[in-house]
Image (cartoon, rainbow, N blue to C red; front, side):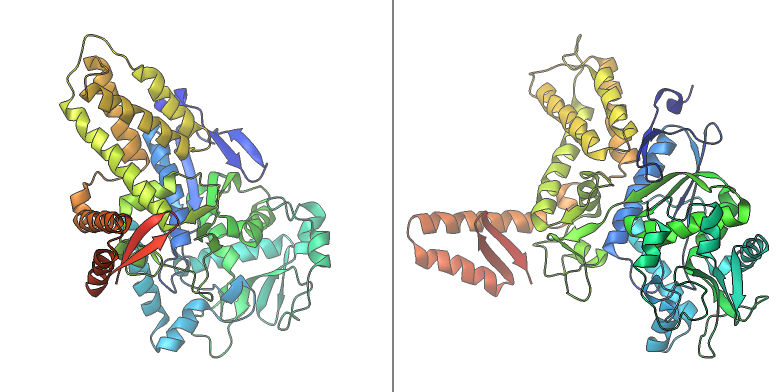
Length: 493
């Protein structure tokens, strides 16, 4: 008997707008597709949050014993600015600005993407297909859609006919939008005169003479539309109907809506049974934005080389911070939040490290089997990692009580507790057991915290000369003290 036979997962399905009991198409097997990055720049921290959430989903499904085929694509062509049907391909634009080949751009940022995910202890997907590696499949898919009467060609470009599709299907079924409302709210845009209707979207775009990335097709030398690649690659590797499709909330419309329309137009059936969407990552209460400067990339967060955070944070601390919020909730990244998560992370690691030295007793004061099921119940409830972490801290509290002689565990319960703590902490949440010393920042933090306390004592004793000297000497060493209503923190230059 597999674990998945006893543990039934409830998944919030964006398609239905409610939690549903997960039942894979094939018993014991799960097909999961997640929209990957467009590799024209360093991976965005918000994207890392999305991929981290689905890494946890992948890990839990594998933990339950499912055989999972996890497909996460690389978009390396055909992604126009603002995800529109007009404009310039983001990769081509980057290549033109830096005067290099587009595939040099792709290679550079694909390597960066993999390096960042490896740093955060991601499991690799089963398959990582690229858009440029599946041009033939995309052309064949366009032919099927055209043969079924849901697309048309104009001047070498092919567009999906949303209005024709909506006569027999429901364009808006995922995002809960009505075509009539979309028509009412659509402005006339320059460069879209080839379309029958503004709501139609490109399946194939004829390349302008200056466009570097192009491929031959029955309609023109050009490139595929952005929405098309995911439909082509997901159905190739997972079938015309598969279990789970994931991505960021921002992809729900139009990207995922268009994926559904393309599959139904080509294959005559809905492609996905469970649609999952991870929510946005904010920074200090506001949306991340390059234009406003309210942004930080993963490398800057890990190194501490940024203007937002008081120190560098270990990858597992950031993973732990992410897991303390539901994947469907907006997560606000703050220094206070990361500092609190760091303390909690090391408290959990300390408790796990104590397990090896605990001595069993003749009886248990902690019902480990019941606690274990509560951990599964949390993850079975739409991968509720915050509740799981609360249960892990409950166990950590009992571990410390056993160490202090105020609680007891039988040898059988002790082994079950070890196995369960390790499984959920490391296998499911993907954390790595590191010590404070391994972060390289604890000694500095401890010394500065001591000086902050001495400065506070000096101020309390009205010894302002000593207080100012501590502040000034630290500033001379590149350590800036920041006095606030919640106390004093520090940043390093």
